[in-house]
Length: 299
Picture 1 (cartoon, rainbow, N blue to C red):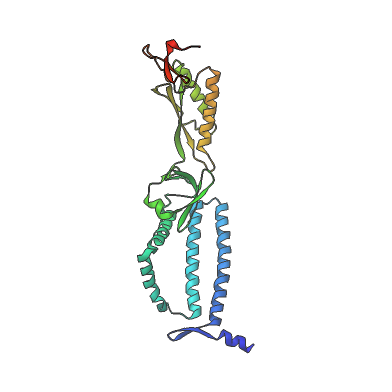
Picture 2: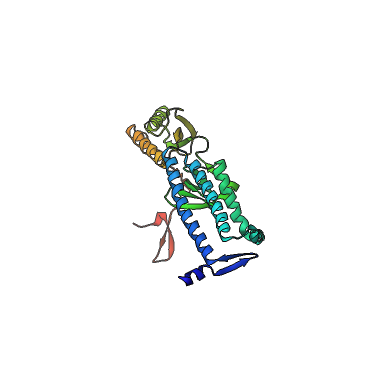
C-alpha cells in the first residue's frame, strides 16, 4: 500500500513553485473522463428532446456546438486547477499557435470560423438542397470544420466550410421552397398546336407534386429545324426526399402517352439530301484493276 502512495506522490514535472504528481494527473483524467461522458449524455438527451419538440434542426445543431465548446472550456480550466498549473505556464503556446497559423494552420482556423458563421447566420441549413460546382445534394450536417452533403446518387461528400462562404453556391431552399422548372418537347410540323398545348397542360396538372397556384404555363417556344418546340413551365416544392428528376420523368412519360393517344408525333432530327443529275457512279473491277463506268457495268 505504501508503494501506491509513493507512486501517486511521485513528481512528474515542476512548473516554478508548483509540481504535478501522478496522483494529480490520474485524478484530473478521471474527473475529465467522467465529466465528458456525463456531458455527452446530457447534451444528447437535450438535443433529442428539442428535435422531438419540433425545434429547427439548425438551431439544435448550434446549441449543441455551443454547449460542447462551453463544456470543453470548463473542463480544460478545471483540469489545470486540479493539476495546480498556472495559466502563465502556457504562455509559450500562444507563440507556437502564431507560428502554426503562419505556416498553414490558417486554413483550419478559416474553416473553423466559417463553420460558426454558417451555423450563426444560417445561409445554409440542414436539409437544404445545394448545388456546388455542378454537384447537387442535400445538407446532412454542418460541423465546425466541414459540411457533409448527400448527393442525389446517395454518395456523401465533405466540403470545407470556407469553400461554401468564398464561392458561389446555389441554395435551392433559401427563403422559399417553391421553385419553377420546365419540360420541353418537340412535335412534328403540321401538328395541331392548340391541342398540343392542352395535352401538355393536362400532363403537368395530373402530377400531385405540381402546384396548382401559380398555374402551369405552356409556351410555343420556337419553330425548330425539325420540330415545333413547346415548353411547359410549372411550380413545385422542394421537400426532403423529393426528386425533381423523377417529377420531370413522370411528366415526360405522361406527355408521350397523351401524344400517342392523339396521333401526334414527337419529332426527331431529319435531313433531306438532294442529288442532281451530274453525279456519276463508277465501279472498281478487282480482276482488271480498272474503274468501270456505270453504263458498262455488267450484272
